[in-house]
Image 1 (cartoon, rainbow, N blue to C red):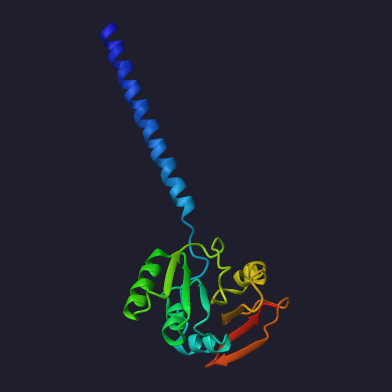
Image 2: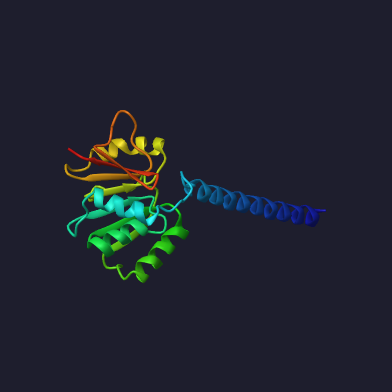
Length: 187
């Protein structure tokens, strides 16, 4: 009888250890899922004509540091570097798009002037920017307004398609084949 109780006790301990292990693994997996935020918008690339208009409206030069918030495949920072000699930084939450952007930068031979960061744009530091580009929904632009308004004077903000709302009207707007581009300069 004693041996049967001892064996049953060992079995119960093994079951309890297994349950504890499963709970720990499950907690770790849930914590990992909780840390992985889904993108706020679906990726839609800006047409080349819009990218060109954004760069022209912001008067991008080789002295600029262009931050693209939600950079997708990297076309805006790559264009800023390849055509205007600027440095470019893309902030993108989707790791697959960051990998694609890095490959595109390598093909364009601008990896010495362009980098991509896999990060939530609401947690990113883009204070070094002299130009910030956006193609986000209006409510996201408005959420970014406080951070954008704290950038150094002279920083240009350019948004594809969506403005900042009535509280911050753009200083310039351009229609590019039916798509809007808006410009603000931090005062």
